[in-house]
Amino acid sequence: MTLKELFDKVKFENLAPILVKNDPKSESCLWLFKQAFDRMRQIPVGEDDGVAIEVKGWRVWSPSRVKWEDELAREVKAAKSANLNKVAAAILWELTFYGFDIEDRPKFAADDFQSRFEYGRDYKESELDENPYRREWADLWQQVHDIKCVHTKDIGTKFYTLEKGEDILAPLPPEKEELLKPIKARKKEVERKMRRYDLATKLIEQHQSGIKDTDAFREFIMNAPPFDVDKIKAVCSLEESGDYLSDTIYRWFPTQEGGSSLVLINCPEGVDSNDVAETVWAAFGSFLKLPKPKYILSQSHDVKEVILTILTFDERK
Image 1 (tube, helix red, strand yellow):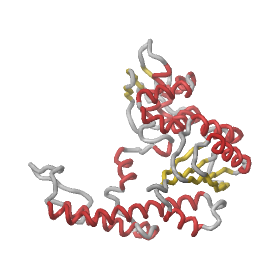
Image 2 (cartoon, rainbow, N blue to C red):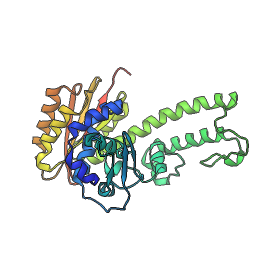
Image 3 (cartoon, helix red, strand yellow):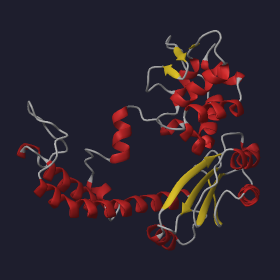
Image 4 (spheres, rainbow, N blue to C red):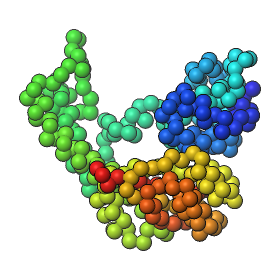
């Protein structure tokens, strides 16, 4: 039986409790597992490379960095007595380890590391100027790196070298630790602003028809209290978008704590955006999943499915 055939035999409702039992943290992101499951049932099957997915209990062996399409073509090997729901849940957990959608999966582990921490990144001048905080952040990153260097030849580079007998985890001299404190504090603050500026830019680009005053929106994001960002995607036919989102919000999206929230709804062309907005508004209102939600509705030819971007603000911090 291929993975595609296995996923066609099971229902996510039966996988969810197994995911939570084996990984309690899964309970906070079940809607993402649901979207990944639906995506894998939706996309075409790729080429069978002759490699099997072997499952023993919760342990799954399958060569990493393989496209989901190709994973779907692989044979699943498990004990004859194994419960299909448990096998499917274990594979779903494994395949979503690096992301819950196709574009979220890094090609190599180093790509994932770099994308999160921008370690060893050489920015182009144009990139440094796109964000008013990025140049200062890059300079501060380099300062921290250079102070930590044991060998002068590493200063100005993006790496550290070790010679025989040296321990990379050895504590820094107290004078270096003191020197680093204010630089690290400034770097943390600049990085916070840099991330928010990038987020504001991205949201403005994605919601051009809905965000009328871009300057005011950017200022709002930059000065807002701490917030979490989540996304809900309607992984279904366009006609079913409203029902899919309502069901996801009710059954799988966890109740968010905070003082307020903002929901940005982005609809593809060909969808009744007002109808979708009313459904989303009714779902969040009826099921009380968000604190004091406000909404921005957009329509774009760049998206192929309805996407909700949810910002939940914590005024206590």
